[in-house]
Image 1 (cartoon, rainbow, N blue to C red):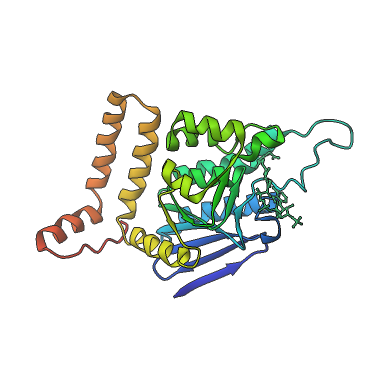
Image 2: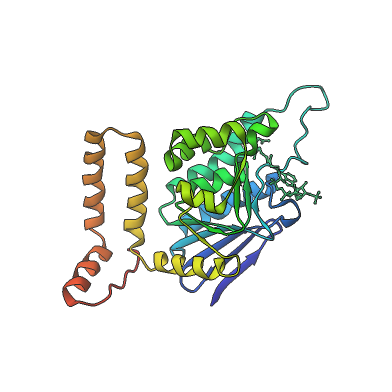
Length: 270
Ligand code: T3D
């Protein structure tokens, strides 16, 4: 049941009674390519989801037949009127990097529901989510090399970690499209479903995660992030610190009580 629904021009937000927030990129005519407004609205929505205790799982998806085609190339003038080249570094720092940072550090599960093509930064954003659930019609393209750029929005960080260096290099160097089936085979997506059942299946998964011990789920994300960049000794120390925090939660008490009572745990996310 819908608890609150707000619509903006470029991003649709829908929070249901189970605490699942669906964010829909809403520029279907250009396969949800990012203009400035969309990137800033997504940043704002992710920040607000982080703060809102009613939100316990986030689904990110696209309107129409695409997930996201990355940077809107129509709105990008390659040569400025004074003859200077555009400053893409500034654009990335202001518009894409904050989205990737927030997806990785937001202490709630984030699912990319990849309904169609995910290209350029659109693919990279899906890679930064915690899980990728794809339609059989989805595809992924690291299109950057086709326009003379490097993969951005963290793809050279996330992709080798998801699929290994050999496959990451092939995807980045050739910029070829891979189907949902190949992405599943690579371990790039977690599950694929027919287009007709994608939404229902993803919602079932999101509700399961939304009913989970949200605080512990946030700590799992922290642990995974640390594990990717740390040596074992430091990691184990950090792990002990995080488990100390998890052990103080109401959900830990509930989880153990429910196990001993042989009943299902009712987690509150606290
Ligand atoms: O600039 C910076 O700030 C740096 C940051 C860069 C980040 C990046 O993401 S760079 C990479 C940008 N993205 C791309 O290079 C992908 C470009 N798109 C495509 O290669 C193809 O459209 C797709 C493979 C994604 C899909 O192909 P297809 O055949 O299914 O659809 P289509 O016919 O090409 O596209 C449908 C419409 O969407 C079409 O408009 P039209 O002709 O119907 O009016 C097309 O122009 C539009 N569209 C698709 N992608 C973009 C786009 N319009 C603007 N920007 C796009 N990225």
